[in-house]
Image (cartoon, rainbow, N blue to C red; front, side, top):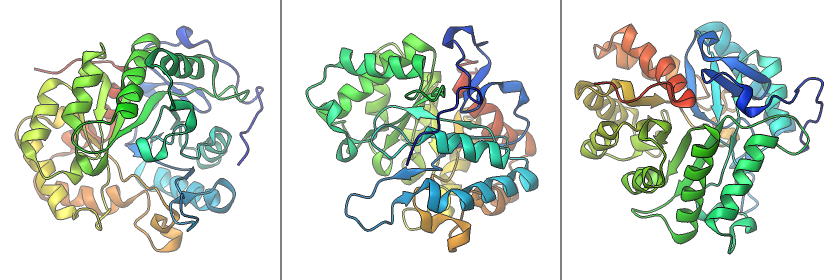
Length: 332
C-alpha cells in the first residue's frame, strides 16, 4: 500500500491555527458543527493485522477499498453518516492516502490516527525507546503529518493493552500517548483487549496529565461489568461500546443490557458507539454485518427499549464530536 502524496489536494494546515472546535480530517479541517449526522467512533477502513499469512484480518486498500467506499456512501445516503473515526495506527497497516481517497469518493469525512496498538502488534520502534522518545515520535507525526502526504492525524489511538494491567511496553506507549495528546490538543482512544484493563489505562493516562474527557476507553461492550463502566463514566472518560455486531465475541443482547444500564445510571453523555470492522469478512459485500449494523440493527433495539432520539443523537453524534474536540468536561 502506498501513501497518497498530493499536497495540492491535501494542503498542510498549521496544527495550532485550527479552531479548537475543528476536527482534523484526512481531507483537511472540518468544523465539528458541520457534522450533522451520526459518527462511527471506532472503525477501520484500511488495515493489516495478518501475522499468520491467513489473509483474514485485513482490509486492503486496493482489494477491499471499493467495497468500503460503497458501504460508507450508502450509509451517508440512508442514515446521514457524518464522520468515521479510523483508528488504524502505527504497525497496523495504516494507509492515510487510501483513507483520503475513500473519504473523497464516499463523501464521508474521516479522522485518521497515530499511536500504537497492543503489544503483539508493536513495531520494532518501541524496542528500548523511552517515553520521551515515543512522545516525540507522536508529536512529530501529529504536527508534520504522515510522511509527505500533508495528511495529519486527528486522534491518538487505538492505544492498546491486554490483561488487567498494561505490559511494560504498553505502559510506555500509553504514557507517550498521554504526553503527546496534552502537547497537541488531541484526544486518546484505547484498545482494551476483550474489555479488560480499562481502569488501569485510565489511571495511567490521567496520571500523566490527560483530562478524562479526552480519553475513550475501548471495547467496554466486551466486558460484562456494569460497575466498571459506571466508574469510567463517573471519572469523565468516554466508555466505548465499539464492537457492536461482533456476536462471536459478545451478543448484542448483552451489549444492549450493558448500554441500557449505563444510560439508566445517568451516563449517556459518556457513551461512544461503533462496530470496529477489522477484517474483510465483516463487509456487507462478503456477507458480514458491515459498517451499518449499528444503524440497521442495534439502534432500533435501543429505541425499542425506550431510549429517545435526543439520547440517540447524544451517543452517536454529540459525544464523539466532544470527545474529539475536547469541547466539554463531565456534565453534572
